[in-house]
Amino acid sequence: MAGAAESLPGPFDGIAYVPLSGKSRRARGYDQSRLLARRLGKALGIPVVKALRKCRDTQTQHQLSREERAENVRGAYSCGMDLSGRSLLLVDDIVTTGSTLRECAAALYDSGAQSVCGICAAEAQRP
Image (cartoon, rainbow, N blue to C red; front, side, top):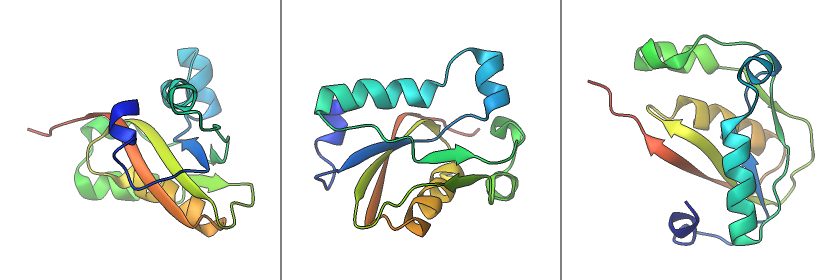
C-alpha cells in the first residue's frame, strides 16, 4: 500500500480510515482499516487521524447489490473534527462498489477537507 500511495496525488496532511462500529470492533478484537492506516502512516511518515466514526450499525455489505450497498451505508459515518484545508488519504481494507469510501469521503469533505484520496488493500470482484 505504501508503494501505491506514493503514486497518488499528494502530499497528504493525514491518513484517515474507515472505522468499524464499536460493536463490530469489540466482537472482532481489532479494526483492520485502523491497523492498515497505522502501518501505512508509519511507512510514509504521515500522521493518522481518528477523524471518522461509524454512527450507526449497518448490514454486512458482501451479499448486497450495488444499490443496496449505497443505501446501507448512507449517513452511517460522521466526522467530529475540523479538517479545514487538509488533504487526506482515506484507508479501507476492501473496496467493491466504492459506496463506503464515498460516504466516508463525503463526511470528511463536510468537515472541511480540501481533498480526499482513497486507498484500499484489496478489491473484491463480484461474480
